[in-house]
Image 1 (cartoon, rainbow, N blue to C red):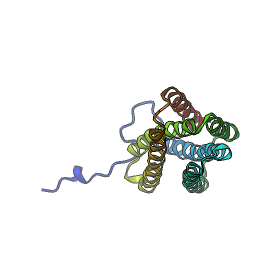
Image 2 (cartoon, rainbow, N blue to C red):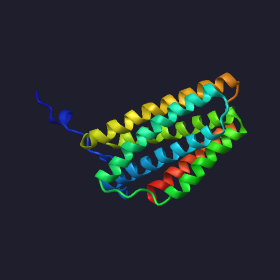
Image 3 (tube, helix red, strand yellow):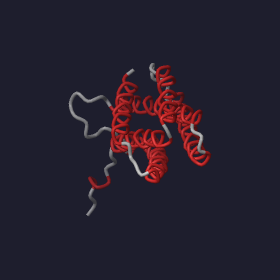
Image 4 (spheres, rainbow, N blue to C red):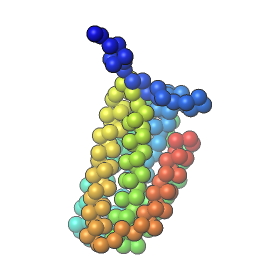
Length: 191
């Protein structure tokens, strides 16, 4: 028996509700915010690298920054290829990203790693929701997001291992940074 329903391909946004954005607009927002997020991550790591003294930790941060550079190049290309404007808030993320990285590094290595854990937790959740939204019509974008998410999870685990070795998780700082990251995501999608 041939069941055509089991062969039906999932379309992006097929479970959206009345009043939700059209899939094309939602995909534009995804690419815009992902580009902004990868740019912001590079700025955070630049701020951390400017002040982290521990050579071993600095090497870990350099590796994570290299991943973010690769991600940014991918999302920059997607912006250009799909003719999507970047967020108007990029100059703000330029300053705030560096300030967040620098300030947490100046507070100490524990705070720098708590920052990374918090940001990457928010990004992991964010990319997971995006991947769930995308259907078979956006397989390539979904694969890019899932691949990028894997790197972000790895960054979170690296930072968490460092935090564990310090014997702390700095929950209040992580909470504040994670909430701030979610606000930055919301703003970058829209502006």
